[in-house]
Length: 280
Image 1 (tube, rainbow, N blue to C red):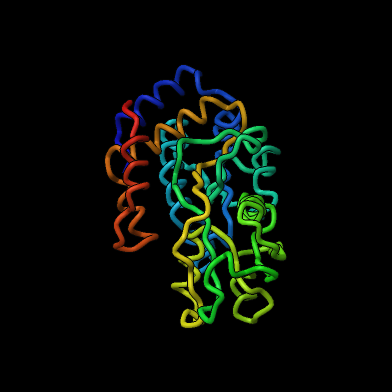
Image 2 (cartoon, rainbow, N blue to C red):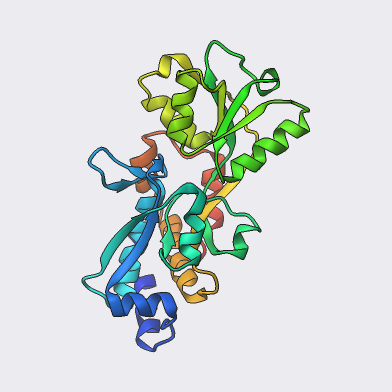
């Protein structure tokens, strides 16, 4: 859990009114915190078997909600999970429908025109999932159908990668990762391009695991962070402080293990925890 020192400091600031900005004042008035989540982006943000919001980033947001509860003095804070679509999730934050977006959102300069971002929550990269009968490398998919999540950063990344390697392939936008994986199985797609963490999850949990393969190569590196309303610097300070405390205290390891099992964080994630475990 997040240490009391940080919570106590934020509570003192709230009591002086310095945190009475739009988002936090609304939370104090309504007693509700709205967390956006995806139903289709495991292991980061998804609906579990019982229908409840789950995943690594969702769990980070639950920890942050405890800080918000204490810092705003809202003992009976109601957590409202709002399901968002991949293509329009940033707009839900911009338009005030969601207070914090808890999913695998990549940080880009263009997206920062719509929302602000917390310190990083994860580092991942794009990869290629395909049938194990081949072809087995992106260069071999000339003239083939490659699916990608519609409206995602990977859609633009796939275009750039194909252009870089001078590959003529048909890009097929998909509404969800699940649809993309299913389309590989039923052969309406030849491969699916997406975040390796998400593709690994679908590969490990698929009943068709024996016929699928994830290429080892990374085609991009992307930094995930929590999207929050633009210009709400004090909310951002609270969110960043909560995340930094989790990283610095190593409490994040428990959360990581819950979603990724006993596999140790790789060198990129270990560096993230060290670099962003910012002192108080």
